[in-house]
Length: 346
Image (cartoon, rainbow, N blue to C red; front, side, top):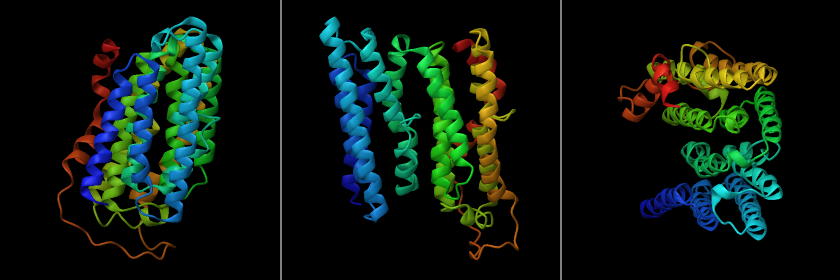
């Protein structure tokens, strides 16, 4: 792709995200989301492969439907209350429609079907954008309207997302699809707590972005998209693969790694809200995700030849690891000791 075109699309992404995050008016938020959608489409379809074109089409249709629902929700609210302010969403029907719209934007169950397909059809770098930056504007709207949304509905969607993200990731062999289902399961954790402690949702989201960015950038460096190719990449950059092991275990939420912080704080908050059964259920469902993270980690670092795949081993490279990957993997694994400080901030 032309560098100038890439620059325009990247600038539009930043602009659209900035407009939505900083707006108080529904129309401005909607405009930012539309700019974002239009900017990411060429990045998804840049390879001109039929699967990439299909992914771009699916993405466009779902995001357009979600934006329309969001606009309809805000117009209904303005019709009944006279308010266009995002924080003043009070009409019950509007709240219900907005929940559907945000769930569709983020890829929450039952509006999750588009996300694994789109991620599978995109390059790894675009997949990183779809999993992190593109979720930022809808997550901001979710945060701003969390006090108006129905907690029971959100809890049902959260438990369903954690269950489905875990179950459907079990039999996948494509790494991008596994990471898509991982994202759906993580969104379940964020959604279950947003009605009670929205700041915890944001903390979980920020840490999820760090860990996912580290994973995607590492996979992009070693050029692995399937489990079978991941098995043969450890010779290329052994130290990077060792860090990938830790990052994946952190994504799974195992102590003493960074990913344990949000799970720990969310379970604690749910127990305070007399929702111990829900906390138990979502904790047990996260074990499903742990299985496929362990599978990825096993394929990345513990599988040694001879094995059944017929891929050639890659040359060992002495090129230094990208600084951003080094920083992200370090942060993704070592933040647990400062969790008391994080807990006081939120």
